[in-house]
Image (cartoon, rainbow, N blue to C red; front, side):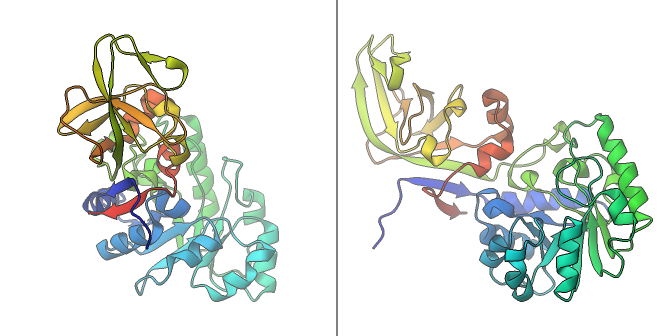
Length: 345
């Protein structure tokens, strides 16, 4: 029998669905999919997919064939696209799993053709210089004869609303659209949806906003989906003038009570996140104090009625944490590790 973990992610399924519906409404006539790579941005891809499929989402995006296999069965009518395409090592999985590759290079196109082809997606690079065929390759005959479900590209600077690259990528993608036949065309991620109707095409692919991230100020209605619950391992009295934690960098001026939590940077809660953060303990906001260590963190609980074994909640306000720590909202969320039990409510 496995003991319960002293660390939980509390996940709000209603908020997840509400966020998808909000993004779907702003996608206009375009279908709204969901990026569930990195194990559903750390929340659990199977659980995320099941909840979003129940709400009507039918297009899901993962990074690798291992992620596609881990999803298991999806409802009829739902489709999975594998964003990293097909390496030679992926061909056996690609032949057996109910998922489409997103072909990213002429070599991947050749490999897919030689294996018998079939319906696929294609990524075209319009200025990000990451994955994707060049515009010249895509329009110069490299894709002839393929049955393309979704031709897509990816915006590099959508979170910066006025960045000149957004308009350049839009124009480049619109030009490719006119030359490469596909069933659907897709450009917008979470932030791209909010750039306006011209960016939405036939299918949008939100990611971080589904999970509580706010890529731009226009996404203020996005709700938090995850929060941390950590168990108190010990409550101790600290006399005035004493310090807590590595480096003795926090010192109390008065007698204080301190609770030690089972949470640290090995769990993905990095040191930079502690500054200005707090935990709710017994209805009281208790500041995090001292340095985050590998497995432990401390909070001051002088004003809270708590004891060893109690649970406290650390909100995951991704925009606020990102602003205070300098870490991206994506890093904060996907960095939460496997020590957490995941509880959906």
